[in-house]
Image (cartoon, rainbow, N blue to C red; front, side, top):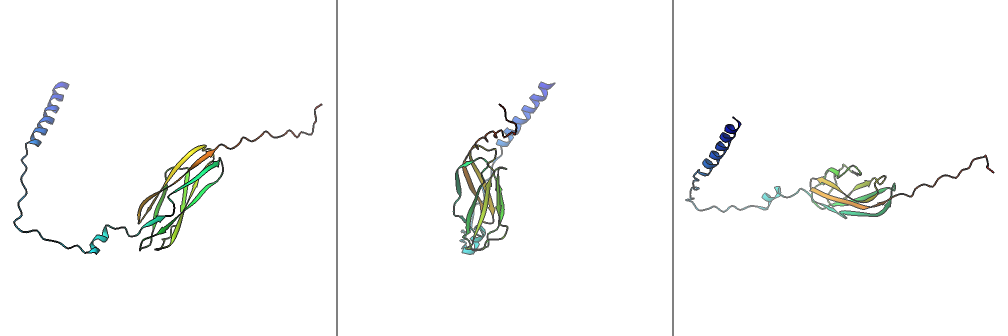
Amino acid sequence: MKKSILSLAVLAFAATGVFAQGKKLEAAPKATTTPQVVNVSPTDNKAAEPTTTIKFKEETHDFGTLKEGDPAEYEFSFTNTGKKPLILTDVHPGCGCTTPTWSKDPVMPGKTGVIKASYGTKGRVGAFNKNITVTSNAGTNVIYIKGTVEKAPEASAPQNESVIKSN
């Protein structure tokens, strides 16, 4: 029973392929008129252009070598190089160890803004390279922080300051 159902399914699949190949394509009707030239004004292309642009002073910051537990914070500076206000709609870190903060106010043309990136070094020994995705009305940009976290030195054992002296 299973073999007959399987055979029937394979036969139906093959027949579908055969009939799909057998379709005759019709040629497009030939144009009997001369083509028309359409002039496109510069204002017609504005829909494809971004409403503004963003230029970062630096897209990658290298912290170098940090000690475990030390703060790792950097402010990325950017300029609105467009002609309309720049609005950051989302600044999203690539992981939970990075925290970005930014102003929600529009950045006017020619003005600058900052995105502060903080990386938690506690318990994260080793090299890191993290991305932060910036979404705005100028499109999507990615900025990076990187560095190396060294293990913090072990705390030495406290001295025995007991009042009782042993002889």
